[in-house]
View 1 (cartoon, rainbow, N blue to C red):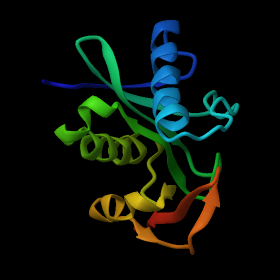
View 2 (view 1 turned 120 degrees about the vertical axis):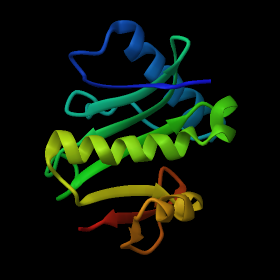
View 3 (view 1 turned 90 degrees about the vertical axis):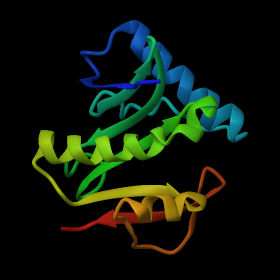
Length: 149
């Protein structure tokens, strides 16, 4: 199934798009990962929202931040793909699109992420390198990773 990619500011999101994004993040980060944490963190308003849709349903999302908004470098966060679409390489497309949008929208090439440790090899495939020891974020092992160009 073809996926359509969109990038919007918080203000440009429709209420339906925002609802679908927050629902997807809750389904994965809270319910599936069994992690009670504050997803709605007042950072969505600063972010660019990249999302992929199939037949009107948002199935993938990431937040993109310009340098200085979250880390020293640009950053990608809340990377999520709906469970039933994970075997279709949409996660790889999502990261490729995230990097492309940061390059194009912010004219930035250095990117920092706080990655769940089990996804380290996934992010390494996209050029990220580990830049920290493992740490706990919401009781889930994470690692800081960067692309530095």
